[in-house]
Image (spheres, rainbow, N blue to C red):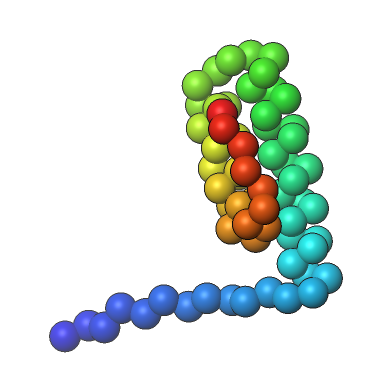
Length: 64
């Protein structure tokens, strides 16, 4: 019988802030592209990045 494992890496301090900053920049790039084009797959990419950003920074919220 095979067991499934989940490995999590917990980031703290400057690494977490750097990741949040990187995700924020990526989100703004993709979201601005969505606002210009209204392409559905770009919207989904913006939602994915927003979700990842929310995981790193729980105060981040946006409704797209």
